[in-house]
Image 1 (cartoon, rainbow, N blue to C red):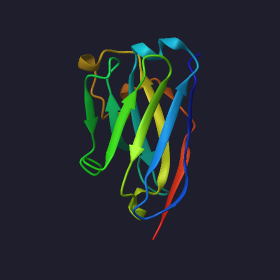
Image 2: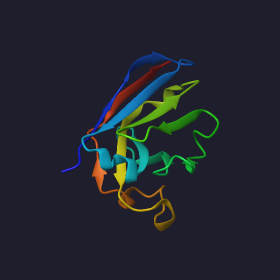
Image 3: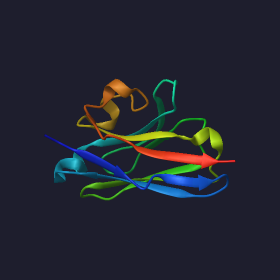
Image 4: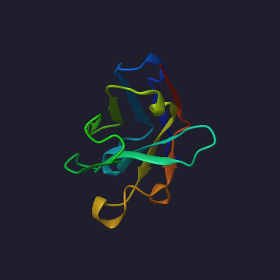
Length: 126
């Protein structure tokens, strides 16, 4: 079973930066499209960003475009770089993996992903 573990969340002030990481339990991680989603209390799960298996293609939600970055290595790790954080960025952030090619799925849809981490809390104070 593929397991994904997120880390790096915490409490920050508005305007700060924070980087989240996602580590997979197997080295076939390098074959997966990887995505980040977030969910605030009482809200639906929201797409944040995604990156293709080779790192050559990325996608971002309009709400974070120009603010967040996504990257990966070719072993087991993906990162979400968050800058100029705002209180509305407060949420549990989840890492997700899909074992299909970037061009065979819609990376902004949560049901495209078969593997999920348990999430890490990001809280941004005013």
